[in-house]
Amino acid sequence: MNSLLPEFYKSKFNHCKNAKQFVKEFHGTGRELYQQQQIDEIDKQINSMMNKQNPAAAGVVLDKDYTLVPSDSIRINNNIQRAKQIISNLSSTDNKLKTLDSKLFSSTGKLKSGEATHKFFEKQLGEVVLLHRKVTEINNQLTGLQEKFTRLFKVTYSKSQSRKRKQKQNKRKAKRAKQNRMEANCKQIIRTIAPQRNDSDAEPIGPLELHQEGIIGLKKRQLPYIQYAFDKELFTVAAKDTIKQYMTFSMSEIEEDDSDGSSADARDGSSADGSRDYGNSAYDDGSSANGDGSSDDGNGSSADGDGSSSDGSRDDGNGSSTDGDGSSADGDGSRDYGNGSSADGDAEISTSEILDN
Image (cartoon, rainbow, N blue to C red; front, side, top):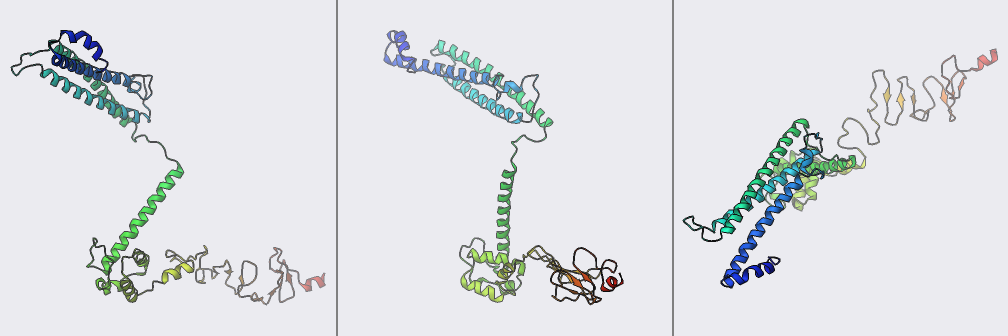
């Protein structure tokens, strides 16, 4: 408007009847130029969409010789959104032009004034119709291309995630899922031992709200959830004492389980250090495996990891004794130095054989 005023003043002011008439014509001319600027801007946006030199423009993918790739999903969707926005702007401009043009006519449909302005509005409306038709055609082509892309590529293209990123996300999901399970089990316990309690109640649960039979029916596997409720101060001190009094197991069993290193899941006989304790139960062949790595071969002798017997005795069941250096003395005077030779009769050297030789 400021750029229009000097030139308009020189050409119109001396020919107007009064200042009021000048202001009216000045604002009318300003509105015409503003609407024309809006139309020109929309035309530039459409041309920018069809620019084949711009990799992000729709003109690249709409070329008849172009072959779709998985990453085109983002480009097609973005241009469809741009086309819809341009169509919306054209509809708004069309409504404004029709409103301004209608003010030039009386209720009987006769043109009151501004014949040149009316012709100018008609010209602009024609431009809007052409632009609307053009951008609608582009939008239809992009929509068809999007359907073709969906048929060619079953999954939508997305940037691949690194392994570290996936691990971080899975860790957060697992932590959140664990917290949700803990809270759900905690609520289930509260419904069991305090059935009159409402979830909306904010005050801690008192001893009068507790149900004795529900407390007695608690299982040992629910102990972590009970402890979680205690830590969250969902019970008063008196209620905690009442629960501990009527439970069939002790709260200290958690500490005992943690102190010896055994977990709640190790009910199959596995110990905390990774060894498996079978309770010295015999295998099918009569041998047994102890937790310290020793094995019993079923004939009365046992070998520890250092070669000595598990009970500390030197007797291997056949009258032979084992010295501290790893050698063994049999009852017949033979000595085995533990150098890998077997204890069979053909490998040991006895005193009688030396004398014979």
